[in-house]
Image (cartoon, rainbow, N blue to C red; front, side, top):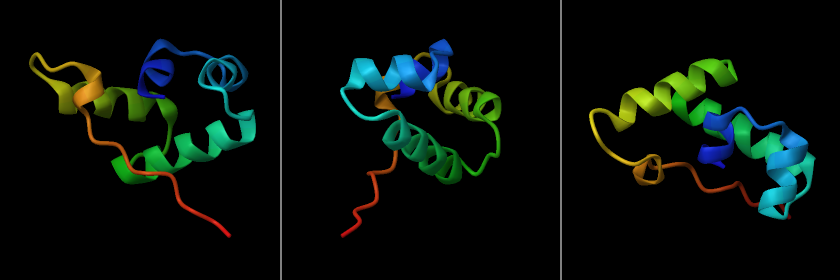
Length: 70
């Protein structure tokens, strides 16, 4: 998900690649933005890059687990 967000993929494209619905993908992005304490996807991408500096790989960023609903 982080890679899709950083590359600017649409929700439809990213969700299809991840095998989840666009609605689920959008919800998970919203949860990630909340976890990062930002309000826009652009800010989220910038914050992810900032947290990865100087040389870590984006997959090492800790992202929240999806919320479970019953």
